[in-house]
Length: 203
Image (tube, rainbow, N blue to C red; front, top):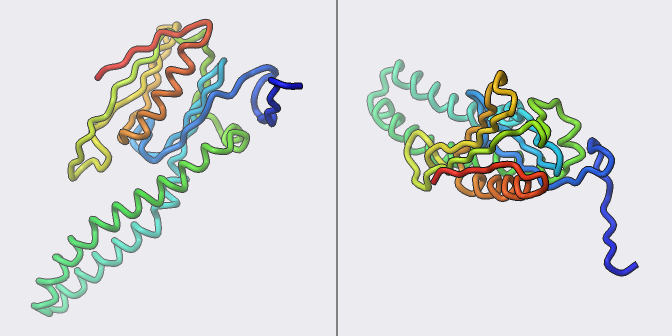
């Protein structure tokens, strides 16, 4: 019939529940370690810790940097004066592009995991909150600038305040500007549906 659109059912959703979108990124974190995923439906917000995936993806690159450090230490101890002077410089020059390459590859792979909602919903859930239990959604955008400690901008966040004030706020840290914009679109889509949820944003 004209006007009707067939959608493949998504495993893990309730009957009649509408999937709004999901995003997974190494630029998200809940706690100390990076790597997090968030799924939005018209009824729920679901969070997934992805730090193990992020760590596994970064391991080969971290090992390469570690090997370079080991070479510097061994050459310094061997007393080769010229190499002892040059290797720290080489290490410093190599560390920056390797770090950037590591972050880009890890982000590219991890972000693809949000494209398959069925597989994402099979993962162990860090939290799951229903629309009716949410008091407020508060977002703060990360800065667009970069520095030596934070590649991808200064930190932003998404805070989920629950109606039961005995429960702690859920805070997801955001470092990347593009990732923040994608998450912001999902938050707007979720909060604007009936019954609406109050959503605020700090500049």
